[in-house]
Length: 394
Image (cartoon, rainbow, N blue to C red; front, side, top):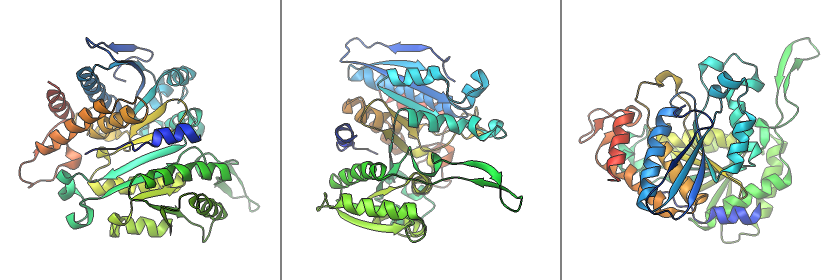
């Protein structure tokens, strides 16, 4: 299972807890090519478990290539709320901005659901994305050959699927103003949000998507709801205009409802998809299930200037936290993306990807990707998966 950066970081630069918070952990191999400062945010739920597997493996892979990592552990989400009363402490932001990249596991949980919306764990995630201007969210949806039979869809539908969803991440309905609660003319309580995009915001994410498509199969599908929403009409107009700069890329358009259906009916139709914050959130989670589990897929949120944020697509899964059954592979693959996009150490990324492939080839399956009756597979715990991955570095 390999993820190619395909030069997107360079394009963006051109165009646009397991450890106590505050702790610094330095892994020093004998020979060091560079010092890579990583802001580590284990977060909530299963986050600390999968982050522990990830950082240990990243250190081992780096050592093989003479790379040195310095881990700066900070708080975000529910863990930050419990400790400081805020989902994104100032100290976390200061550390993140001073590092080369941010590695984030998961945030949220039932414990904090009753808090006011501005104090919930999710506001920490939205806040750090906005503060780092991480406007381009790249979410690969790849079905590894070893897991084609684990998909809820038939093997012939998902085998060979390789989709890249490019989601705008710091605007749209999640950030638009005004938002809040009020009362209408009938005296009824209402809630409201604003979905708004400017032309420059659409232009920059469109260029990222076209650049990605140009380096893949030269096919880009823009997803919107322009038959109903004015914000989508502007989106479509701007994407078409930017597309004139990429005559070698085939541009198509699809409404969000049809795209959600086609992603299940004919997923191999898609190569690169570009869409808004809300639609991208929905489609990327749906696409992740093509492989059978949210636990398998990574993501990168990058701006081209400053550190990117690398995190698995799945959530914090508070119902299984501490049970040692979480899948750490999406976290590991997120670190592989970090090594390619932000740290420019592709050899380390290749070692991480090879370790994941070796585990899948050996039949190792955590509960989320285990299918009873499949020959040659074995149900393992998160720690067992971590031990196997580490053994590949021996």
